[in-house]
Length: 568
Image 1 (tube, rainbow, N blue to C red):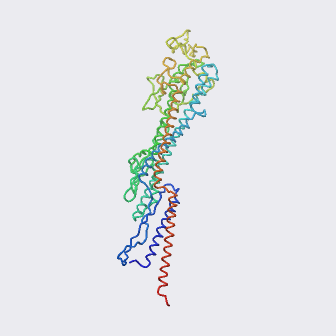
Image 2 (cartoon, helix red, strand yellow; image 1 turned 60 degrees about the vertical axis):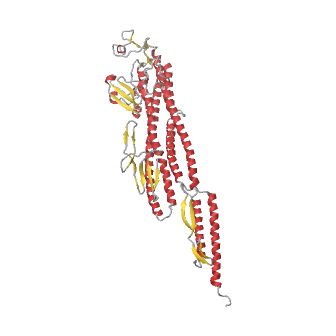
């Protein structure tokens, strides 16, 4: 049988239920703009009824309502879809950011890049071919050559700096991942402790899921939830978090990479020493960007190799105003320091050759003049670019006279005719380069104004290989059979196409992410109209319970204080 005051308890339960509903609504509204927050709902149910006996027999009379749980609205399938697409989104954005930086390095729109320097170099040779006797035009070639070499070096050095910056970003991301993984472990512990009592750790779960959102932006993550509410995070086959334990990630010791003048790194698992592969996300994009950036250095190195080999060989075939051939543009002492100069003006006993190895250009510095007996030093990547420097002989006073603008006269077979010491012409250079006193002999072709070799030097820069022109010596070029201009423009066009394609992927993935986020927000997002409707409902319920409580209180007051007082 119910007690006299059971009605009061019924209304008090109703007041508590509606008040908790109002508190939940207020919590939702307060966090409507909180990142990662999930809408919460107070679920109420009727309390166990009391058995009341009446003249009609036993009856069940309710005792009001109570809140059985406050749970968050969350769709785990939408979450898993979001985490998967978020890794892809982070990957595309990481790649696009690198393309934007690389494009700024090779930007030729302000007339200060490689394209401009190469055009000035070509124009200087073309001008010199018509005015070979002019000291000014010769000096312009040397100055333009210096500027072109420096432009190649600067661009490669900036790409090198971008690689170093990427490794710095990776290192910061590893630190962030370790911090986030530690937070997941701590939240696992707290969530399991709270939910062991039957409660729902809604806000802590939101914090943990937000951390997973951040982790999936950097790497591929699969999430598994245990029966006690703890998460297990697996990234690319590696268990990063398992309940209350986690791994520690760190950067590997530096691996010296002489070919590109920097140190390479891996992400390793500290406990095992094994390499961690991100699989996707921003970290994967950064590692791939590093390899792509090295490929851009290789492309610039190919241009330098072309200057050191094909372009250099053509210059060796020419003569300066003073009649000398094979004058150095590299260092004067090749035995000690042969790889510090841009040798496309030749050193008589130093040659450059090239070969392909695993898709990378490899330049060889050959000593002793006789190629069969040469001692070769192999150079790759930045090592090739490091040798680009104009020799002091050409930058010295009257050094421009050594610029080989003249060709030897050719017979019908394309052989060079030289003026011999005793008069007449010969095709044997050994008897033609010096007179009886050891002085160099001039080539008898149009005097100092002849710029025939300068024509072929300019041709190498701006024309395709033509096998019918013996003056352009070799079709075995580091840049292929095209001209230097076409090689560079093709490389830049490919870069622009790759960047535009990646930007399109970023835009497409942004649309995908928008759809996934909308799908997720339809479940866990706070709807103000819905919350305000609930607020009014709980407010009215709270007021109604209070009014009913007052009515019961008045009845009890009359019963207690007014009953039995008649006639007193």
